[in-house]
Amino acid sequence: DTEVTQTPKHLVMGMTNKKSLKCEQHMGHRAMYWYKQKAKKPPELMFVYSYEKLSINESVPSRFSPECPNSSLLNLHLHALQPEDSALYLCASSHYAGPNTGELFFGEGSRLTVL
Amino acid sequence: AQKVTQAQTEISVVEKEDVTLDCVYETRDTTYYLFWYKQPPSGELVFLIRRNSFDEQNEISGRYSWNFQKSTSSFNFTITASQVVDSAVYFCALSENRDDKIIFGKGTRLHILP
Image (cartoon, rainbow over all chains, first blue to last red; front, top):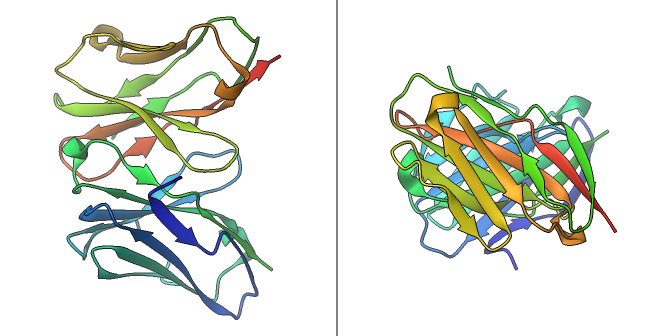
């Protein structure tokens, strides 16, 4: 069982909807990440939170809004998405941010479909 | 700029055969980290190994082995005596010392046929 839990596993939303993806870890990790993965493509980094502060935003459109309420939780708020935003959204955590952090622990992802 | 190239898009082998997945990387940093991740159909990426740029020792873990060669900027992954459960997409990834990013190659889809 993964130690990073993502909900919901599947989400279908219209372009005018507002929804949120949630991610939770209880490993005491201080870095959390959102990745986007299109079919048959590698994961693409979207955001990095380090000690609950946003440290990296990979020029993600503002219709994606991340939030880190505490060290265990990471949200991705979605508003006015486009059909091309349909993808698997992966959350990950690590002990701390930075290249020497060791492994990333990934959740199973939230598969988003935008109609 | 950093770059990870996995030239093999898809590989199919018969069970019990050995298979090597290639990874070539590009970086200007002298300190960097290389990773391999496995993504089974369930979607979750599973960490396999991390290697830093100062450690060129090859590593073996059960049926898995990794060959890191700085001279050719390669970090290849070999599965010995492959099994059907090894079927997955395998990603090689790179992180430079200057930032918090782990950048993935395009992945190699491995099919192990019974």
